[in-house]
Every structure is written in structure tokens, then in C-alpha cells.
Image (cartoon, rainbow, N blue to C red; front, top):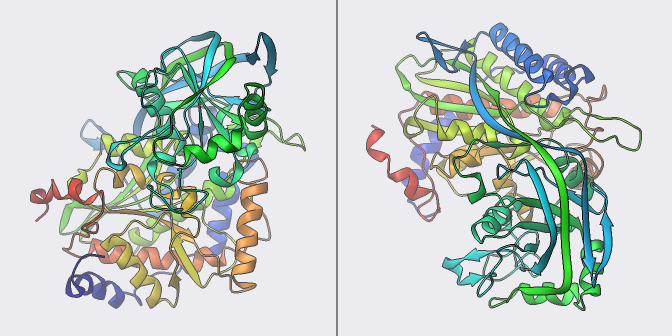
Length: 550
């Protein structure tokens, strides 16, 4: 961290001093809220479904009962409990016809099995692609500052590109992209955006579990249901017509038929100077219609107004949505309940609001932002941060809560990604004061920093972080913690099995939430403005609005 010890101490010492002044959080209440929100009655909390109204009604009722005031859109001079979020909703009608062809021999593909194609987000109401040439574009990355261009000398117009997931450094752990930690270039969202900028008709990403950080079940469940995006003036500028994933084995066989060695080409793609490789006499076809329309979803917003500086804002955030109703699992369950992801964060948000509403009034205002459509690409937080209800220049910090551990206590904690900031320093100090150690993101290659609702704020300069429950469990240590995390990712994450369990004690959340309370409380009763480290890519953006912070 490039700043003086004195400035670091100036920010963290007052925060440690507040360690004893925090409320107790009620495990029974947390459990009841998670149980309700993840019950079958809420149908997986899909945005723009009947379950959205049910979710909003429940969360607003809880926020009212907790003592919060509405902090959403203004209507007739008064704040509502929600912020309207216009979204493009797109869904494939019926079963899409998909297939490869080599040397004139067709190879039919089954949606959700060999391939997972997303509903078109470029504004198309139908897709009719016949025998589009295929071309392998390595990691699908154009990074001028790293002298890297997988598209150099390649015309993608009318073609379907095939790209690898994550960064070129993932396997070796070293190279031009900073090693194992994923950059934004490794995210699938970036790869689709860049393919659109390059003029491709479509992009298929090859799924491999390790570099993706999740299995095929997650890909299938997340990409074959209803898609959402923020409403854009030119959606085709960031979305090619076809966006999809293919299984690794499918890609290997396809490359073999085209006379190519998948693994050998992957190795070449990990080096600067890679040139895109056409798959000779091999094409892709797709035919389906898309129900595309603009709908309105909602962020839920509660607020405690500041006593001295109400125009300065600390935000706690969590997303309320999950995947709704989708394809059945092996047991025939079609409801993706989303108990851990993210009924836990929503319950934590409600109870954090209760703590502030019933405690000493903070000097700065505190907003409790329950965002929509996180599972569709951080869309609720993207919309809020692009059209904020309270100015970002005078937003002190964002503290996000997503996928909290509802079981036992841990001796440590982490964050999604490890971007350096004074906000993170302050959180670490609070954790240490509570006897907990901070561990940097144990899986930086998974790109979690770009996958949670703090990121849209961070990229606009607001100091932001997303709390991560620890893995050094008080019973079983890190071995038990890592095993539990792996079990969740493989068997429950984005699957119907993410359900409330009676065995959950919520002891970990009861232990951890006071740390986040003290962090926000100290910021809300301070005149300080935490910043990013001097070498952070977000520092310059934040500094542009420095004159608006006194």
C-alpha cells in the first residue's frame, strides 16, 4: 500500500476504538428470514416474476418493522421503498435448433447438455444462422496496455468465435496478466463484449471447471433460462447475437475433426503473439426465436438519515434475487431457492438496518440497498451506480454482503478479491480487534471481485468491498472450511439444492455481522473519506470528484 503509516493509522484507530459499541444479532431472526425468503413459496425469487412482488413485500415489511425509512425513488416529494430498474428481458421460445457441421456432416447439439446458449441480448427477436465459419480466438482478449491482441489480423464479421475462459496466466500462474488472480479480461462478460466490438456474429466459451471456478451445472442453469440486461441504446455494441458456452469435451472433439489439437492450441494461446485459428470446413448453425421486451424490476431501499451530514452516505448492499424456476435437477426439483445465495445477505441487510435504526443516530446517512438481478450480471447495482439515488461523489463506501456462511464461526474472513484500499484496511483492523485474521481472496483465479455487487460502484471510483465468510472453522479448521466450500460449489451453488437447513446455527453470521456494523458505524460517524491505494485502477476515477467531498 503506497501511503504513509500515519495516514493508515488516522483511518483505522477510530474504528478500533468503536469495537465495544455494537449490537447483538439474533440467530433465530436471521434463520427465520432466510427460511422464508428461500422457501418454495418465493419460487426462487426471480426478477420480473410474481415472486418479485412477494419478495419486495416481505423485505419492505421487515425493513419497516426494523425501523428503517424508505430511501428509494422520489414520488410527489416523498421517498418510495423501491427504485425502478428498467431491464431488457429476453427468453428463447421453445427448443432452439443448434448444431455444428464438419465437411458437410451435421452434429446436432442439445441445449443444456453439450451447449448452453443465452437468449439474444442484442435486441434480436429471432436468430437464424446457417453454417457460420468457426474460428478459435484464444482467450478472446484485446489488452493494448499489455501489448496483447488475440484478434490481430482477424476479420470476425459473420463468424462464430470460440474462446477459452479466464486469463492466459491461469494455468502457469505467471505472465502478462499478473499471475493466478483473474483480471476483468478473464470474465465471460468481457469476452462477449469484446466479441461484439470485434464484429463477431457470436462467441462460444469453452467451459472448463477449474478456470471457470464452477461446474457445467452452474453454466447450464445460469445461461439457459430468462436473460436480463440493463436497457441500452445500442445493445449490439456489447452483445454479439449468439452468446453461449460449450463443454470442453465437445470442443476437443470439434477441434480434432478440424485437424487441430485443442490442448496444443491452448498452450499457444497463453503466449503473446497468438494468431486466431480457423476451424477448416467446420461451421455452426442456430435457429430460434426470442421473446424480448423491456420490463421493470426493482431495487429495495431502506435508509437511516444522518443527524449532521445527511447528504453523505454509507451503503450496505446485498442482492435479493436468485434464479427462479428452471430446469429440474436429478430429483425433479425445479425451484432454485437461493438460501445461501443470497437470502443470507438479504437477512443480514435487514438485521443491519435494525441495528442502526434502533441505535444511536449516525452523523452520516446509511442506505440499505437490496438490489435486483445480480444473478443476471450485477444489473441492479449497475443501474443504481449509473443512476444513483444519492450522489456517488459523496458516497463514503459500499459494504456488500453476498453468500454468507449460515453455519459455525470461523477464525478468519476474506473479501471478494483483494483490491487495495483504506476501506479494506479499516475492515482488517476491525476484524483483528475482534480476534479474526484476514486472508486475501483464497481463490483469486475465480474473479470474485468482478462477480459481486460492489464492483459496479468500484469501477466508478467508490471505495467498495464484499465480505466473505472465513474458511478456518472453529471446528475442523481450514480443512473443514475448504471441504464445505467445495461441497457447496459443486452440489448447491446455482442449483435447487441451495435450501435452508434446520441444522444451520447462524453462529458464524451472529459473530461476523458486528464487525461490519462497527465498520459502517465508524465511517458514518467520521469526517474521513477512505480511498483506494495510489496504484489502484480505481483511484483516478475517485480523485476526479475530490472537490465534492469536504
